[in-house]
Image (cartoon, rainbow, N blue to C red; front, side, top):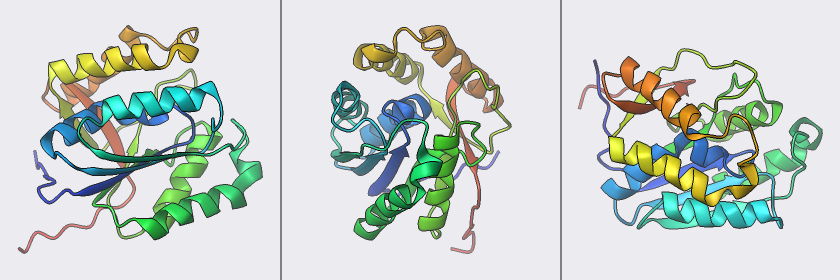
Length: 215
């Protein structure tokens, strides 16, 4: 198994179509990165939920998921479920983010996610961040769109448990959803852990990866 590290990690970008997407898809990875790299700059962007209780939840949650990080979060007001109809605005928002940062790593939705908002944002990210490592996180849902991931971030058991605790603590507006529970989050992490020879893990799709193995 080849393990690619992130020794020089100083700045990352994390984006979501909705408040809680980043935390669900990559919360354990954020906890792991921020603890390993104190002072890490995290530029986070969410396309919908601005001005609502969802934004308040997101700000508190990402502050908890990025301990010790230099966190910048922007939450926009695009309508939930309507990204294709607001493509120009979404594209402009992503391009504004790109103009302000040169990240070492990008965390974004998967390009083959069944949700149109997730999928649309993912395609915008791989276009705007052409020369960056973009990892596409996964979100379990009724569509049954989970695939065969190409990259894994193992999670220490205490990190996996903390991720679930923070999800339950910071997103009370989502507690009524039948899939939003401890079993779902830890169950998927356990499966991905089995696949990566770990107890728990988060898994990611990789659209394109350039290697530099000569140095």
